Every structure is written in structure tokens, then in C-alpha cells.
Length: 349
Image 1 (cartoon, rainbow, N blue to C red):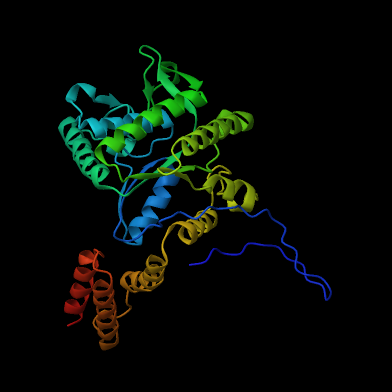
Image 2 (cartoon, rainbow, N blue to C red):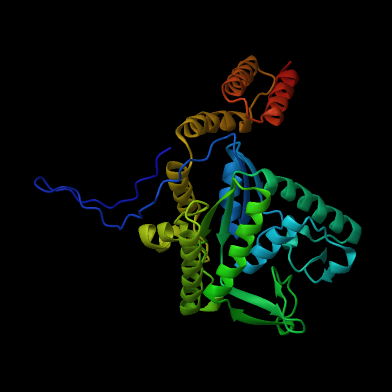
């Protein structure tokens, strides 16, 4: 899968084409990701985009077990809690204005009007993430901002504010040294339980405009400096993928942002994903992904006449393709897709 070429070239009979952009230099990941690898993805909403793409392409990925986390100290706290295998307790849940019971560390998607159900779901996610952390080959961490919200009465940094009044918090920007110290500690602790684990860091290209343009730049710069220190200190274990630079410098155009002028557009996310595939995923996995995209489209196809012989043949062909891919890629988990196609065939008669 090759990145889309988004150049603006002008050709003349005696001139070579001109490329009006600065292309990002991306260091290929070695060894690259394979479908047999186990992955854990944590961080900002951009981590969610990449993690979801990995799941759709049938990688073994556990994505954001706490929900979206934006700042590095909350991510560090979440990982530390996984390492400690320390479940959450009722005392740590609060009833928030955003719709239910939750913790200061979890995203609002874990909020539940039933306190016990909220706690059970939070700890189920913790258990899954702990198991994945101990066996994972790669941890992908996307940092979103160096600005943090601290509870005014305790000074504790929260992962999410849950629409609590702003007077409950005070805001500050983390120092590079704080981020490096927190994540260095986590890197050492992870090495004790999973020595093979490597970490891919990225910085989210989402612009935090409420911090102001200058404040956003200071924030992103702080994250970049911290990651650079970590990659220099742990060159074998830590790697950097330049998602931020791809959007901000290579694409560098407001047409690659959504209407809010804050989040990258789908086209921009697609482009970053294709760059990630080209430089971080191995060739065999890329070949599978090209074939799986066609199969996935066939699975999602909604027939005009589900009982027709033509659709039955189409479904049988799709079933054969899935079975063939399963034989060629034993690690592939396609039971759900197989069941869906078989039901379609049965319904077609």
C-alpha cells in the first residue's frame, strides 16, 4: 500500500516536474509489525484512529483501555496501574455531570449511571490491558498535549475533566524533564515484566487551539523534546513515527483539516496511515491488507436482492476468499466474518 501522492507539479517541455512540498523523512521501523504481533495502543484521539485501522486490518490490537488520554503523565499513570495490577475501587468512582459514574483517569465512554456496572466495565478493560501489556510486542503511545488539568484541592492531574466546572482545576504546562522522568520510569518497569516490548511514540497532529496558537506550539514542542530524549536514552526500545510532521509540514494546508480547523481530515488521516503502513508494517502483512480490504468491502456489501442466486454465488466466493486467507495467515481471527457470511448464505437459501 503506497502513500497517496499529493504534489502540485508543473510540467514544461524542457523542465523536470517540481514538487511544491517538503517531504517528511521517515525512519523505517525494524523489525516491522506483523500480523502475529500483539499490540497495545494508548493515547490521544489520534491513537484511536491508528488503533482502529490496525484492528480493521486484523492486527491483534488492544486500543485505549482507559479511553482517550491526552497528556503523558496520565498515560504514564495508566500504564503504572496496569503494571501494578491494581483494580479500581468504588471509592475512586465519582458521579460526573457528563452522565454517570467514572474515575478521573477514564474517558467519558466508561461513564455509566449504574455505579457497579461502571466499575465492572473499567476493571474488565484493565484485566484485558494487563494481559496484553505482559505479552505485547509493541506499545504505541500518542501524546496529545503537555498542558494538564490538576484538581485544585489535591493537585492531582486528571486524565479527563468530565464537564466539571473549570474552577475545580488549575492548568499548567508540563516540563520536558517531568515527562522524561515519568515515562523513563515506566520504560524500566515494563522491561521487568516484558523485556521484549518496544515503544513507538507519536505526537498527535490535532491542534489544541483553546491553548492559543503559541500555547499549542509550546505544548507540541515540549512533547517532541521529551520523546527525542527518550529515543536517545533508549535507542533499541523506543522509536518515533512523525505523524505530527507529516500533517504540519508535508501536507501543510487547511484543506487537510476538518471543518473545525483543529482535527485532521479523513484524507489527512488516510495519508498518515499509508505512511505508517509503508514504513512500519512488513511486506507480507501489506499484501494481506490489500486483499483483506477487498474482502471487507464484500462483507459490508448490502445486496438489493438477498435471496437471489447471484448474491448467493457472491457470498460463496467471499466465503472462499476468507477461508483461503485463513489458511495462508494462520494468526488471522475471522470467526466473526465467517459467521456473518455463512448466515447470509443460509438466508439466501
